Structure formats: C-alpha cells, structure tokens
Image 1 (cartoon, rainbow, N blue to C red):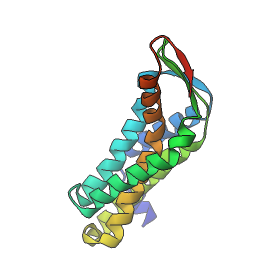
Image 2: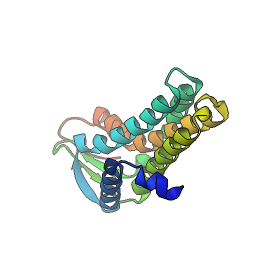
Image 3: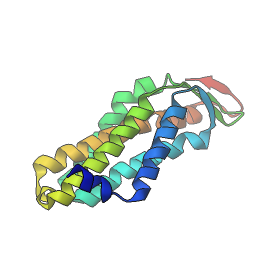
Image 4: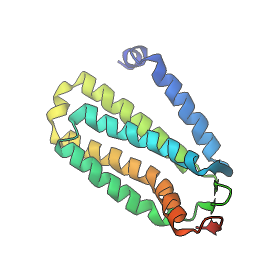
Length: 170
C-alpha cells in the first residue's frame, strides 16, 4: 500500500517537500528579511492548511468552524513567544529574525498532515462525513496555521506601534 501511495503522488508534491525543507533549514539560522518577506511563507502555510479543510470537509461545515477556532488558539498560544523572536528596523524596512527549528517542525507537520489526510480521504471517502475525523483535522490545521501566523501578526503589531524611522526591539 505504501508503494501505491508514493507512486500515485504527483511529482509537484515532492518539489513542495524539497522547498519546505530548504526553507526550514534557512529558518534555523539568524537572518534579516524585508517586512514583506516575513509574511510570505506563513501565509502560504495558512492557505495550505485552510485548503486541506476546505477540500476535505468544506468551510461551511463544523470542520471550518473548528479550523477558525484552532487558528485563534494557535495564535494565542504563540503570541508571547513570537514577540521575542525578532527585532524590527522600520527605517530600513527589515526584520532581524532569530533562527529556530520551529518553522521546520511546523512545515513538516502541516505537510505530513495534509498528505495523510489526502490519503485517508482518498482511501476512505466516508471520512468526509465523519465529525470524529473532520473536527480534530480542522482544529489541528487551524492551530498549526495559527502558530505559524503569530510572528507575522506580531511584526504587523510592532509596525503599527513603532514610529516611522525607528528601530524597535520587540
């Protein structure tokens, strides 16, 4: 069965995995990014998590509500920690990020979860109607997206709170 799953997986999925591993290794090192760049990968991961819930169960379902609840819980859980992982230099339009393996762990968890859910739904279509499967899946994808989005949201909050031309440790 594993061989069938791997052989029926489109090639682009493996390319995505390679890109995520590359970005995860890059995130493990201290780096300087433009403010805009801080948002790109978290938004992509947010869309992937939302897409999994939408395609699997629909956004107008209890799973969609579980996703939104999970998103809020994930942001709330990481809000404090996210504020200690960067320094905003508004004048230069840059954000100094501390290296961390957490983004790699989150990206791999979202990737594996999305992959596992696609396999489960393809092999057992009845799971689409199962709240016992849909609610935890929606909540998990939402929470992971929320954890990923906490830092960009903190950067946005710091931008609003920092006068133009200032450098603000957060």
